[in-house]
Length: 352
Image 1 (cartoon, rainbow, N blue to C red):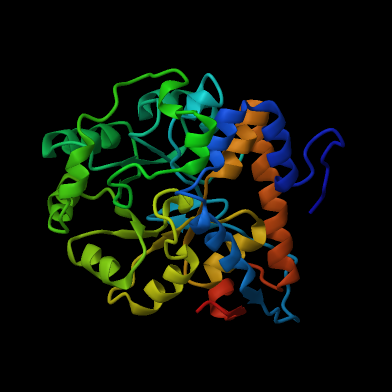
Image 2: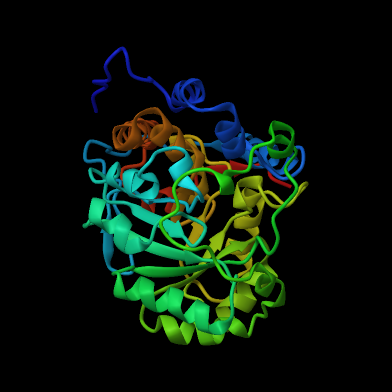
């Protein structure tokens, strides 16, 4: 491992956030960092990571470090997914496509959604080898949802995800007090979903026909925070559970995603892959999430910090910083490969 970062570049992800703040408009940056109401859930997410400690078991050879893993036969260089984030053209004129282009040196998962500004075909032109998952909200009738799934499959998506934890836009004090609405900024490449009221009518049985449309393409449900919902989703055909509270953006005083992860991992009746996001800010956070049961770990805001600061080069730089942190955390925990993180049971959790 070598640290070849130039002195004029952000040296940490924390510093990258500072660089992005200086370059961004106040309204756009506040929108990115806003959370439901006064932001309690966002803080709960990040505080939860502080309650998990890593207990190294030394005397293991880490000279041949391997951070790779796989997702339904697709090999990944790190167990990471860039979580879906909307309205990215307010941060860069090429939005989602530019962010995707910044990941080409890391073979990771990318997730984009109906709340973005670009179609998957448009994004893939900038990153043709990307491993994409398309995320859709239940913001339309069955016909519209079917179109989302079929379009994603035709565009080469390796997974389709349904977000269930945002049936209505939350009240965000920071947005309102800044008087900034991201939906009115940036370039639109496609029309928005037809009717968000459909999200309030979603039933667990609807997952069955969505899975039928997905066919062999893995079907993921994003926004799960309870064992009850996880088991219900699995019963109705879901292939992957994505534990998330939307980065704290939807429900004030919501349950910590990290607590939910530990409970879901323990209580799901069928063992299937688990994605996780909300509150991830460092390489050691990734290590902790995997140690508590996640197979793939998502991050959102740090990727946008990179996009704001320097477009695709900024996103690439963020991943360089993240890789260094993750590799350092693995080596200093005496872990040489991803499967050992859980197998060696090195996490001490004070989550209650």
